[in-house]
Image (cartoon, rainbow, N blue to C red; front, side):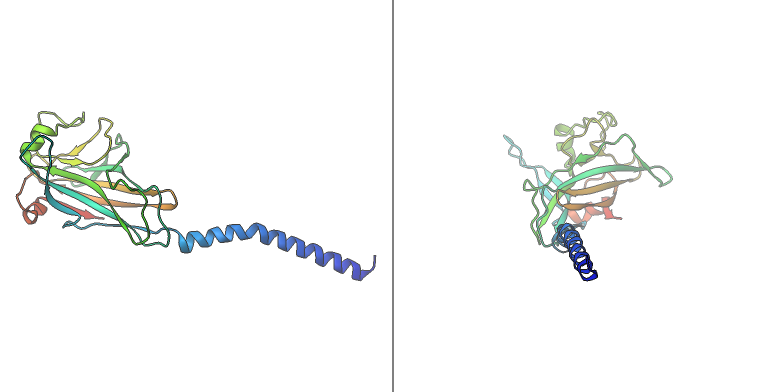
Length: 227
């Protein structure tokens, strides 16, 4: 075989290898572009003010009175170019401040899902709200919201911040104030979606246990901030 023939063979084989490698690489490159430019992008929004945190009323069956309740929520916003599917918010960790102000992780706490909107598909430009928890009117809490947690004495009359989770596993289902001073907690919240990387947010919550009739007064007794 002459030199020119070897050149043709080599060129043909080289082109075949390049085309084969390119054919293998293209799907990964396309997927990379889809994830980088067209995937959902999630962010968490929160403010200790309406519409995130607000005073409303319970609507109870077979009961004429509508006791007041404060609800505390946050939103997840999709600023990406495609919908985020099967979104869920989970309370991953609970940290409790000791008398020195240091936060100690509750190692026995198991992650639980938080209540949110029934439609868990988050379209581009849309926000979805999830509940952190609520504080009911003291009389309503005493009569209708008994704690099921082994961590909380059923005879404890202090007003609790009730966590809005779909299950508790007999762990903390609510957060108590201090005996004489406000008590601080940290909640690690994680957002998971089927087709988007998860994100986390830590909220610090300080609760005095004192009920107030207006949002302006109440949001000095319970303070929630993002860290």
